Image (spheres, rainbow, N blue to C red):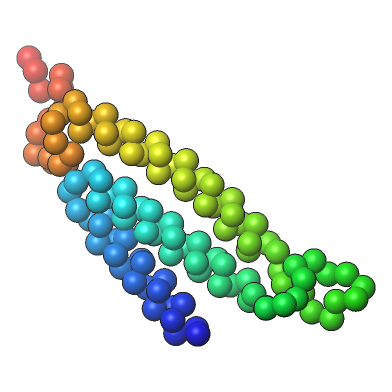
Length: 115
């Protein structure tokens, strides 16, 4: 099972890095999303989840699951959803203004080279 989780995390990370290195806005957003998923799976896997044991220690429980990684992942999911929504709106605005979502590194921004 550890091999499956490690392979999944590695695949998500590799795909995320590949997409971030593209020169288009929407693949970069998808790459950031995949990297977020990889980090969430990694944090969730570090919690050493156990099946059938309570998440909070009480007098009757002999073992428990640490609830902190679960809470961190839940918070990270909410934050990444908001971040993705903001990035999509920024990229959509830029694509509508310029007519393309390609990042051109050779042109100067408007107003800087004008004399």
